[in-house]
Length: 211
Image (cartoon, rainbow, N blue to C red):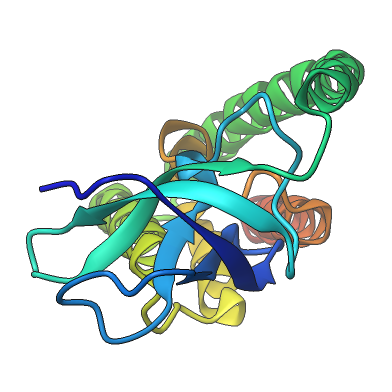
């Protein structure tokens, strides 16, 4: 259910997590405070949100009865210029994403080869593959829950817990979740630690296999 469009100001914005809250100029019936919104609710022809910015938005009631803001657009900036700037940034980021995809593919091939070698040498029981499959399923689910929590403004899964799952061997599912769910892939600091978890896991597996 959607109400008529309104105007307001961004009260708080967490750029790292991609969500914030808007204080409406006019009270929204049934809403008791600022309206939650996610980066996916923002007009892509406008710049990224910032605290204090004036915006136009449409209130939308969720299934749980709470209201959130969708179709969020800044009203105090020159949108076309910002759209061109973002387009240039996306063009600059494409090679980095391509390199990242190649690196993940190479790591996955190395991971599979190490697992086969560990099982062939008897260092790793075949049943360990089932445990790894379960760990990866759990990792994807945890990512999905964290993504949902981010969209709803609820308590998040600590990044340390996500990295621990990756280190234990859930990093393939984490890589898949980052792309499929569009979660954590735009945070350079997180991505650097994620890459470190992959390297550490592969080194530990290689040491276990060839020791």
